[in-house]
Length: 93
Image (tube, rainbow, N blue to C red; front, top):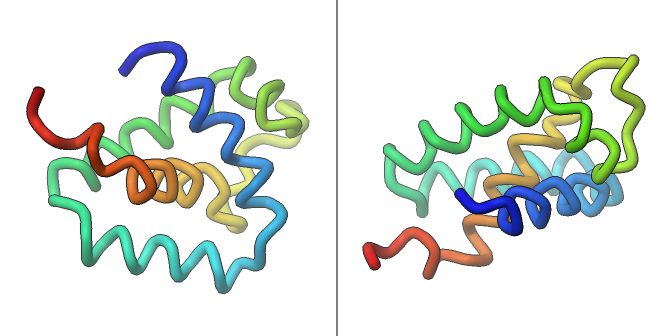
């Protein structure tokens, strides 16, 4: 993944923070139905990476000292939403 895509996903986190938890859960349910298993695994790996990256918190306008907002499902839903909206990135080049 290039740095531009990574930054776009980080900037998608505040967008997810602005919608309800029910909406985020709906995005995750849709991702589970529409995205291949290997992409879902990559989403979870990327979530773990982003949770440890201070720069992501800065871009996402979150306080790093509070830790990842896991109960809110912000990181995983931001990543899933990005890939659902940009499925062309998943197709072989």
